Length: 220
Image 1 (cartoon, rainbow, N blue to C red):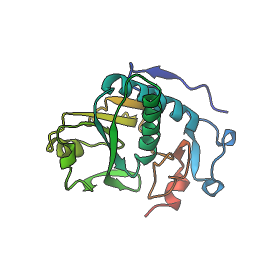
Image 2 (image 1 turned 90 degrees about the horizontal axis):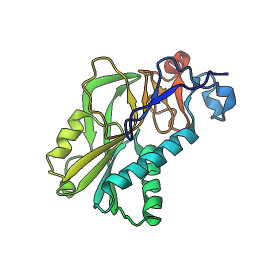
Image 3 (image 1 turned 135 degrees about the horizontal axis):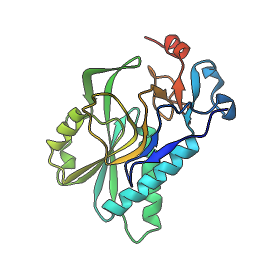
């Protein structure tokens, strides 16, 4: 059985910090699709923990942006599950609060990974005309890159807020830190909860660490 999870908190929206030596939970403690037997090392973040953290982020977004008219820009494909759950929790809070948060949801797709390596070649699909963002407040969810933010800013939204489920501690990273962070994790390749390896593992509810044999099995 894995050791207790050691975490730190990075302020209201700085995310839950998972230490470098966190080994994850034994797969035997959780249910997961058996067709992935041998393809995973451990459960890194259980689904229930993801849901609870997402609700907290929804509350923070409501507190900051309540009564604004916002556009949620979901980054596909890896961000769709986080976006869907975040939007559902914002809607629930809006129904039961004095503050309301009128919102619409739109989608954009980024692709930059080949196997487990991020490439400099970033493809943006569905971003040709984002004129509907003009003058709106935007909550951007998913895997956000500087290139995408620069593209969105060209349409002159009123404000941009970025929500990311995961932020990796990567040496010499020049990426943009989201305004709302779920978890800060070590630089490990994780799958599940819509995060994929060559389109596999999106059907995992938990966030897991892929094994070396799993990488070889699904390598392209």
